Length: 266
Image (cartoon, rainbow, N blue to C red; front, side, top):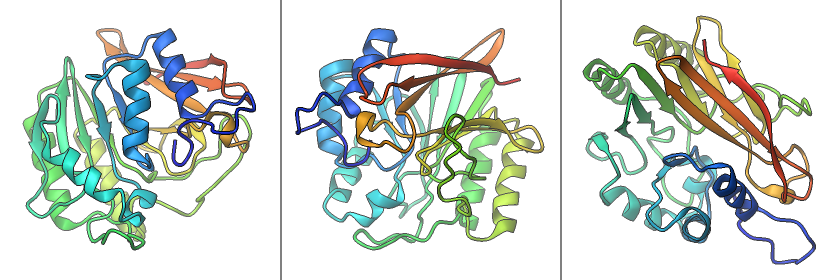
């Protein structure tokens, strides 16, 4: 939803507010995950409050544009210091962005920190440090939940949009080192992680990667503010029959969201 919270132009288009309104009407689920680039955070939180409720849980993963904006990082730091709902474990000492895990019903979630050396106000180099690898594996070993989900900002592999074929950030990954990205995939596969949830590209894709790990890219929720691909949100669910993802996409104005497809994460 970056930079597209509510439309000030009164031209009939809706932005992130339209997505939240649609979530409310469809059934918002139990919480919202934003896999990065959620600036301005306070304004977007206000929209969530309006449509989903003031106590509706919102889990954050910091993206490259959040890191680059020194104005918004104090808000993010303050949020991270608060009582994160259902938190299981917080990140390593000195992790000033987002590395934490939480449980909900039959699922365990891990939010990774993609910019460990970032300095607010400057571009952050994406990578996964040795310390982060150790933290993730310890966390994965400790959970006994039947469904495990990991979320980060950048994709493991950039995939074109399912409808338009637009392909942004085609060379970007969770690390600038291909061997580190392969190691990350292997770690998630080792502990039977169901899916890696990401953003960054603004293009929607849900695809099983070689080896069996699913990658779910949420696209963007800018409504009519981004004409490159339809505005979208994903709705995940998991029960005794398995896990699935529902993809919702908007019309060009960002007013009407419809169920696009349902994909079983077999």
